[in-house]
Image (cartoon, rainbow, N blue to C red; front, side, top):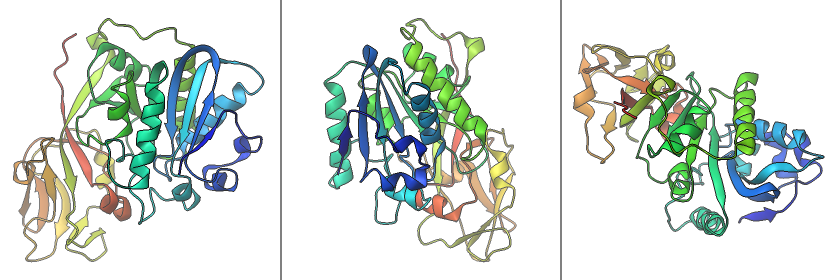
Length: 333
């Protein structure tokens, strides 16, 4: 199901993400040779509704359309069919950012094929470009704290999130091959997200190396995910004003990257609903009651938490999660 190209089709750069299916028959790997053979790997549209990565890539490819790239660039354009419909993924599909550690679906085999191909060439770095469904600052996410990885991350933003789960993401798989980051460009649509991602890609194309020395403390704000929060499949959910076992407060998605005190209300619950959320730590241990309690018909925090990726899009909550909970990570170079 993977298509391979060694040049950019003429019409491709004129297309928005929803239109790519008209030129590309499916997930596509494009290899473009540049002056420096140590390649930058860039993945876009692993989630079909997160379009800033594709727009940033269009910007870069337009810029170098009639000249040689400063370094080789390998591009993976992922879930084109979901992008056609403006969705994160189709219901029958796996999440394209959860297929990178093996499995039985054709998409898992595709990811393995890409990884095997990249093991066979010199890689400078990997950048996986995403958007968030709710308001978040622009930040980079990493799966290790090695200095070259943190330099790649802070080249995008001083706000960096360190995580180890889920371990099936593109960033984690490519970290075994080269410095690898996920960059989160805010919500899709605003021009600044596209510009920021394009600036980061262009910088990566021009850098001669990523430093081996530690990133100074004053150049990084480091967070660590401590839990992922989901809504169990048998719990009906809605936003404020709707009907369901759990009804999220209307401004919940405005709380991202804010330090919330105990007693912060996340949602209201129907009578008899005991605990409509499930929080698990990075080892998969249920830690729900370390962070949440139902009090007076509301789901409230029981500890100081810093959430990320809170969204009020119930489809995305169902397909992925409600949010991640973070803490500040003690960083000593």
